[in-house]
Image (cartoon, rainbow, N blue to C red; front, side):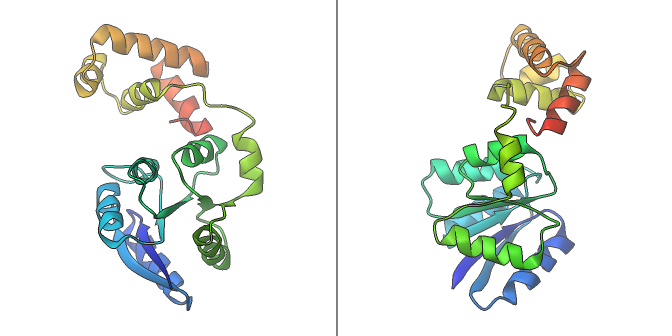
Length: 200
């Protein structure tokens, strides 16, 4: 049996995914998480073969969880299941250690087959998305990404500085660099462009 943990913050979708996978004779859903922190706890506790996770989740994103699993050298393989058909997200997912990247509108049998392929040591990535992911590299540093993300949430320079333990001058520098790199006119436009490209 392939032991799977599911992480998805929409309760109805979480239940539907579990029901869908439990129809498969060789897949056993051993845990369900509604946020990234809960997903990490379940992975440490259950040691599943595969974690199937959304990107956008409360507390920790699916990308944060994939990176933590990779850093802690846990044996669990990660498949990202998302609505984001953007090369930038796929690239970041693979860099974080994910073995698969699927879209939520993929056919059900494709999901089960992806779990089997990843469990067997392979990768499961949409080929068109994979080509796009490497055509336009992400220009942002991790710190620029954090600062732009907080700016997009409406945080002031002062809020961002205290949240990240930086001086306001340093935050302004990161914002200026980030805005310039993505080609925005201001922080709001830069955050929008970066999000559309999958860099945020």
